[in-house]
Length: 146
Image 1 (cartoon, one colour):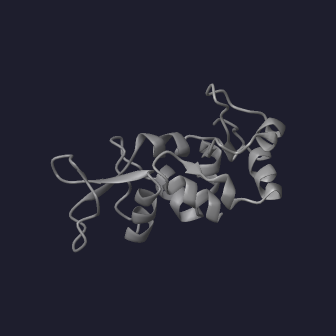
Image 2: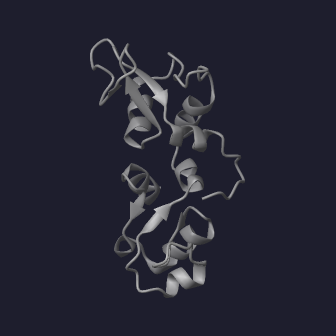
């Protein structure tokens, strides 16, 4: 779970191979939580990725982002979301902040401008699902999309 959250929080979804044991790397690749591209940008198979030199970073897949979420975070992304992507007002601020840290939600002010936080006191800014958050929310539980 730590690796999933760490990669989810990375701007490009990367995780250094140096941080992952070979056994865990195999499990993460086989579960399709991560993938690795070759130098031409094509996704390597599990065995090819394991045999490669490790110069290419692991990239978290949508399924990995989904697996990194708690039940409350997943519910916030999927239940009671407005037509405009606004998260339900009942979603607690720790959940919205966690989703924002993972790039799955963002805070916007009254004019629709993106803000770095919720306005701290009084929650002046509202949480909205990002396009990445929408992709994760729409992912069926057993989907293997990257």
